[in-house]
Length: 353
Image (cartoon, rainbow, N blue to C red; front, side, top):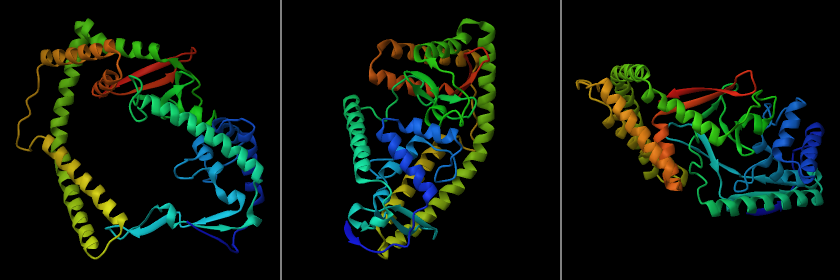
């Protein structure tokens, strides 16, 4: 990283500066980014993008030095070269984060709007929070693994955003992170209660012969529709695969002429896309291949087997079985939509995969 002192053609926007100063003061006083964002949204104050505030806009990312609370411009340091620009295989100009050693920082003290003491208090708290979550994450060692049975399957019926754990209960993520102005759904539900209700609905066809028959008929219709759609999907994928292979050839040509690291990464991404499309094509039935539909009895038996395996995994209770149970459930359920029911609870709409 290079450091210098130079004149700058930037100037302070007083109204925006007042909002930034307020955010720093509130955070230093102990308010959470969520509460700060919710208050700004409630007052109708737009974010830098002109839309609503989100807690991540304020908190940012420690690894990327992003976010309001991590912006060094507020202490009179202007940073250049944070993104590197290049042209991809289609000639489009795109950017990627630059390496830290390529950054240039300039001291512009006349642009400082946050006193050093306030900046230090804020960053002391940010670092303490980062270390606490990093310590907990290292102990759990499952940051990107599903922690709960229904992870990734729950949707808010009001804002169509995700439902996630809020104060040890499931609640709307947009409501939590952006406040009531983003979503009116303030209902919450306990995890054991929700999981039990979902599993009860899934087991219902096995306990009622009429429901079992209706389930099997609907599944047969789905299989039949899939057979019709597969032909069109195959043709579309084959066209995309051809375009991707052409793009790969272009990238290889650019690299032979002395391309950058960014081009190498783009080539890897394209190769992954190609391999994914090839695997999908191999899984699709050939256009002249007859699709054999399972009988209603076979469908009910397969469904019973899946739910039986799910019950075994839930009884085991270990982390590995929890992850497998989540993946198995995603093969049965597309999403669960939760909407206020008018009586203080939540109505569930379970949509099968």
